[in-house]
Image (tube, rainbow, N blue to C red; front, side):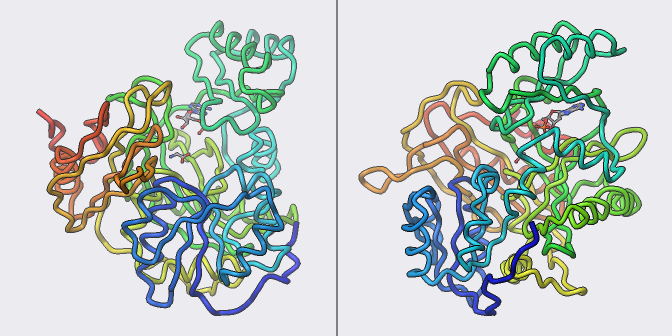
Amino acid sequence: MSINSNSKSSEKLENILIIGNGGRENALAWVIEKNEQIKNIYLLPGNAGSTKIHKAKNINLDLNNTDELVNNLKHLNIDLVVIGPETPLANGLGDFLRENNFNVFGPGRDGAKLESSKSWAKQFMLDANIPTANFWKVNTFEKAKEIILSSNNPLVVKADGLASGKGVFIAETKEESLQASAEILKGKFGAAGQSIVLEEKIEGPEVSVFALCDGNKFVLLPTAQDHKRIYEGDKGPNTGGMGAYSPTPIITQNCLNKIINKIIQPTIDELKRKNIEYRGVLYFGLMITKSGPKVIEYNCRFGDPECQTLMPLMDKDFVSLLHKCAMGNLLINDKINNSNKVSGCVIATSKGYPLEYKTGFPIKIGNIDTKDLQIFDSGTSLGNNSETLTNGGRVLSIVCQGDSFDEVFEKIYKNLKEINFEGMFYRKDIGYQVRSNKNLEN
Ligand code: AMP
Ligand code: GLY
């Protein structure tokens, strides 16, 4: 949908609303606060981390009660809405708020389809000749079986719709591909698995690239690398992300140019060709294969924990860029002003995550060296006595910046020893790709 620009074009930027309750939103609030124009940052619903940000305040409104939402946001004089997670974007919250005259950073339902329908995203890439793994969309087990049995290698199986990051099976054998297809098509992920995407398995290191888009132009954030698996050595089930670092040395300038020319610019062009005015962040999940960078997935939001890793590298003008994207007026010479430091992040999780876990445990934080180190709240809540309690699978994001990754991760792991809650777990090898001191815990 092209945006009928009745959204505000005012330059005023005092009151911000951030939708979401994770580490990503906590980090966004933290960087937005740096800008002296900003007076109030409302988080809907936010988490206990908001209490550590002077200008931040959690609010509780029902996103489905649209009249109440609009009335409250008008009353709060919101100048910019930043939508963090994919679900409200996929449900059209961006469209709705724009129709009600708000400046929104976040695509409409049409642009969010890049994340909410894997088959749609794959067809989009095919239309634009964007490098990605070969794929087949199917909605019956018979068809899946025919394709799996006739392929040379086991195929990756993906639920087509949103499945909270759990809908992807990397099969080692054809039997596993068949089993995953059967389970998903039988309803393991509900409507998200009414159809599946079978994909050729590709190999190589993964990188996350983020482009802030205003519908026409874009600016790039530094590259980042996530660690998706729960256990050291990239073993065990996939999670939302156990840690990250930025920038990624494997992305040389030459490689980045290739990514821009073959993937990012063609994506922006294809969105325009499809009459989709994308105002928000486009997250390219890439794999750097032997035959060059390929898109594994698109997301319509910032990555988590990449966002926590990147925000401390941004300056106080970051929020102005979000605002310009929301208004559709990035300037040709706009760019991200990031520090030349490197950044790392380690996530502390609840025992049992990403499967079953308990919450409600008090979090104790001892003597932290806060110079260039942040503790962002991911899944936390405030208890009756204003104590911080665990309230999710991923609980805290410990982030640090420095001149070298060795320095950064040494400091993170040292400070993690000052943090404690029942069942706390974290990977000890985050950043192993860029560290020389790999045994910080021994
Ligand atoms: P997604 O939810 O699509 O990002 O997939 C989750 C993870 O599965 C990715 O980060 C990759 O590690 C892996 N993956 C997805 N698609 C493929 C593929 N075609 N080949 C190999 N690995 C894949
Ligand atoms: N860190 C991966 C994601 O946000 O999807």
